[in-house]
Length: 232
Length: 239
Image (cartoon, rainbow over all chains, first blue to last red; front, side, top):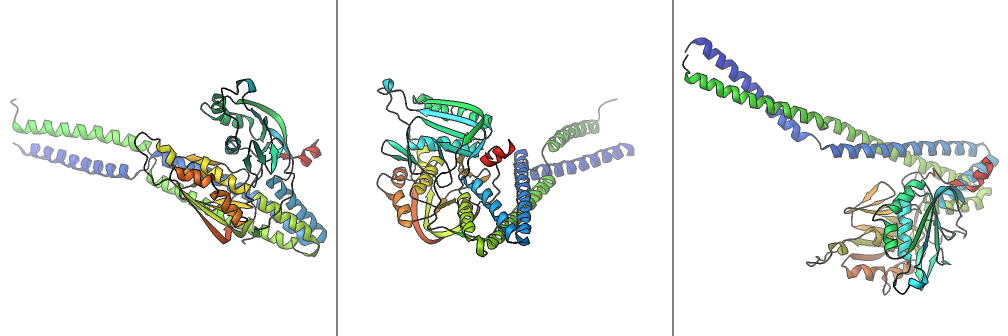
């Protein structure tokens, strides 16, 4: 064998060695990388946080203005507080609101077929519908004129249902303000609540409206136990 | 030319080289498709930064609301302040403290028997809804789950083993529901015969009720804003 042959074999082995090393490193690199869905999750969280931050910025702007006004004098202070009160009342559901949304009417099975169906609408059913609507982004919900606020109950009392300690009777008319498409599809999704109720013989009618009015909570608020705390 | 042993060796080396090259090529294209660690780390850092920025802003907002409250406490604004505080508590804009109960719920520790629906032994969103509803009926004035304030618009949703509340707050069991109100009424409403706890315990779901004399319930960690609902007065003004 001549020398050039040894040389060429030597070169080839060297290249092989380098390639092996690169290969090995690439392998390690792949093990370190992250599945694509994790990265997407982060992206989603980030855009949610950004949205939150924008909302906070607006709130801070609003509060800064009110605080500045309040420092100017008694009159302005009163106005600023009144403004803030108005906002809190809207958030709390103490103000009548209007907007696009859907109307859901639910009724017990008609009396002639009631013999076949032992089912009547119970508190839990309404609770589930309302929960579904909140989940779909509803901003205000009322049932038979009773506005649902954070302390509102939907409770079976014998054969009646109480909401806000008021007795309501079927048919139940649920009004929800929000994106009509989103609200509607949340209930009508196949295998969803609307299907479930229809299978039980309950009459469910869902209608979109370009403008609805959801009444304010009509009673006065009373807090006997809860005291506000401000953390600065 | 007669093939010599080193020809064979050369052919072998060439073969290995070829395989290595193709594997290398495939791996490289694959790596390009998965996000790089460094990029994901940068993203995670961005998310963390945004989170702390949000928390900072939240604190600032809380402080400003407190300042406004102090101004309202000034002599002639007394009655206005009472209304403001009540509306803020109801809306979840103010943290509250007071006597109340803590309900702890956890998945069943019973194993489903063969043929039984294992779903029955897992805590569901509906169970939590029932407990919340029961507490509201018993006069709860403020509610929270695992430290997340429950608003009117709060939904409770099962997503796998976790529960989603207030849009993007994911909670894991055990779930601790805090309620400020009359302790006896609240506790009895859950514990009564045929009540929620009895119903849950049939399936072995672990529920315990503890009276706490000084509960702290935080304000809603976010800003409530309505995109669709417009207050009545404003609608009239626009027309």
